[in-house]
Length: 385
Image (cartoon, rainbow, N blue to C red; front, side):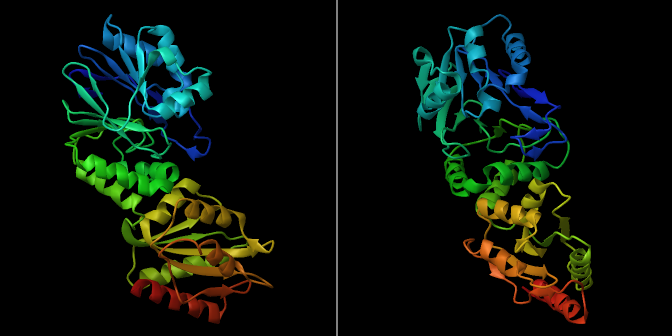
């Protein structure tokens, strides 16, 4: 992958991983990106996952053609980017490690050593002169760990963005960037919208023509598109006007109500409707879709005096990530004591700027004329809101 004449890609691709961070499905794998800036002095940008030590070191050796690196810059201490610090120092004992003070504390925790004799500690505005390339470090705490820094190369007008602007999948994927980037962002970074906003404000002051993240493709065209999406996601604004219906159903009656609502919505002119069965979906994708659309319908059964477990998990994911600024409607089902709508609304009570639909649909076991009429009324309300 071409970055620049004197910036080389030395990352690796993990095609065998089953769950990223122990929870996110990555059917197309994930890349661990690392870069080398070759100048009067040489800097390696970040490490890779521990399963790829030899491949990474071989990639570095190949591009350096006999030269030795002067610096290893660690922007983020998650093990998929820092696991090979010790292996790197074993291979290149003369190199220095450039990172934030918090990172060196974390290194002590991870490796039992903070490499005190090799530390170059940087903070907001610190610089590193490699010769032609002048690097400036920008702190990005809680995007999405507290120690994070990003690095601006003023020579190439390039931002090494750590986990920001990352994406699941291959670096050369031709698939729509937003789909897997959204799932990555909402799942992993989404709680920290305010901190992402601070980083975007800092980035706005820089002339950035290329973004090199730690996962996924290098972004080198139409950067306004990617930055705008990050602005939308980090302010929790809807990405598009549409309706997501998230449901669970035990014997099919709640599902029947959901499909009835979908039909009524489409009949009344709303075609942008996404229906998701929470028991069978990729939960991370479902959560990302809830943030994507402007309106959300939650449909579930009363279960063990609460709500069905998949719905509970889904709402917990939403509130954990600051779900806000949406219209929310409820469909509940229960044979003898339906309380699901009240419980769901209670789980969302601390969410900001939510508008609750006036029409709540209550099903006693199965649809009847009254609940079917309520579904039609809800469809019209959602379209007119």
